[in-house]
Image (cartoon, rainbow, N blue to C red; front, side):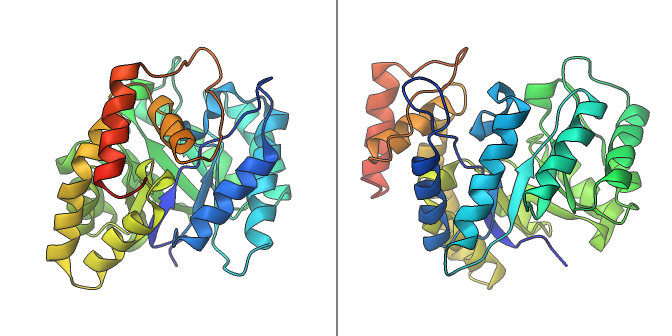
Length: 296
């Protein structure tokens, strides 16, 4: 069974003026997502500024997300980002995340020190053997400088609790090869908001999305219309999204999407250093795209 089918926003982590986590606003963001059709919540992903959270903060953000979903009328899975470049630390963190009620864990490939394809297999296999949760592999070479090859994904798909891969390589041929090699052993989610329909057309199950932070209903509908057979409308929505996607990724993610949420009145605060705010010209373009799409 799939962890989810549809749209899973990689939810921004809001901060107070002093840089601490704004739990009240984070709960508000989770409610906004669930009430507007999102099919999963992804806490502590790249868009959630996971690399700036210490382990205690990381676990607390996941706990808040789990509790916020539990408090609502509609239940969706909470997927917790927990990847990194230290296998031992991920094991410790993953066990803590499991205790606070996450439904699945998303593990990015190791970065900076990187590793070989064999190292990836050993890394993910060890974590999967010690954490009793479904695992989403996360491949994003533009950030990690390490590409997880289709044959590696196929080997890892033989492990029972490795359930899915978030594919953000932007290489549609590679994504096709993953689906060719793995069949129904593993689900594929688009990790790029501008490639959702192409991934769905190959057999993908949805998207783990940045755009869904500000347009949850629209991203949910884009996926579901495709899966329900209305591929023409879904493709039209994908094309209409492109201007907004370009604006949201014209500077380092999540700087633009946090600005967008602030424009919408969510008061998510600033990004943690070393990230900064966006310049006025991008803010003007982002505001224009949000108005065009009816978000403000």
